[in-house]
Image: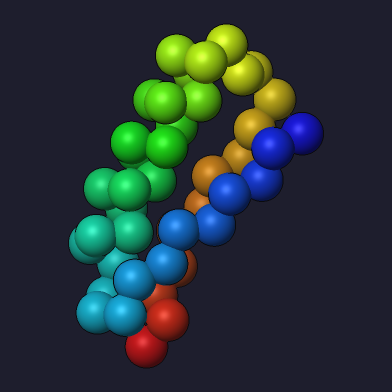
Length: 42
């Protein structure tokens, strides 16, 4: 199980974009068992 947390300091916009990119990258690498979450630091 791969767990990834993306975070940004100004709201949720950029962390959501990175979340989608990480999910796509993991799928391309053949990973099927993963969780990617996004959050705001500030």
